[in-house]
Image (cartoon, rainbow, N blue to C red; front, side):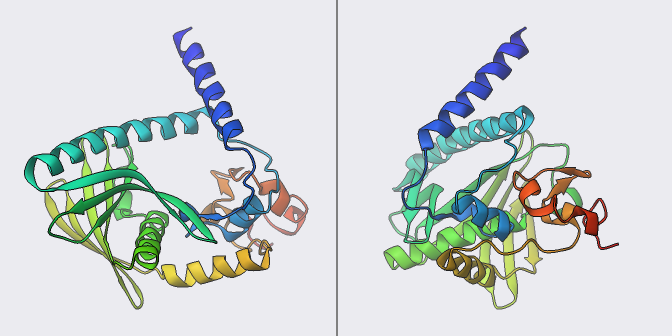
Length: 258
């Protein structure tokens, strides 16, 4: 009974939040779009209705992730106020004619550069599975916040990805290079340095071009599981029907050419 009431309330709260957002008068790309499927991103921007919404299990994950973020914010604010002179701003809006987003935490110290912190919550079970932290889509989002802040404010900030779970944490300072991203920091109090073969600037240029042209690029043939179209063989993207139903007779179950 209790779980049913919680589930009902969670779904109703999500629907109210969606209704409150309404239709954007001036659609923009979200900073969290960078690194994701450009077809899915542009279909949303163009107002195409998707065929599914997030299941309750995923809504719960989002809500718990926000709770983790609130706890981290309180501790971060206490640390800044207790040890150094500075401030912590939450949900700092960054907006241009193309992009829109909210920086989780903007830390401004009296004697140093601003620090952008992108917070991500995750579970213990698959923590750093096969060394998958930091994740590419998270790197792209955090990197873009740093770029937009620099373009809007004329100051180049430090960019940090912060992961937290029940018993683990990881903090990565991101530094862009010509052919990838160097992520350095600590994981569970141990130094860590990882190289990610990723070029966010090229992805940004590709997505901005599609946005300015007002078109959704064709879905890319390949493994649908790798591109986020499916999960464990089942459709997991709200635009799956739009992209693939008419083409599935040319492809196998996982989207590979037969």
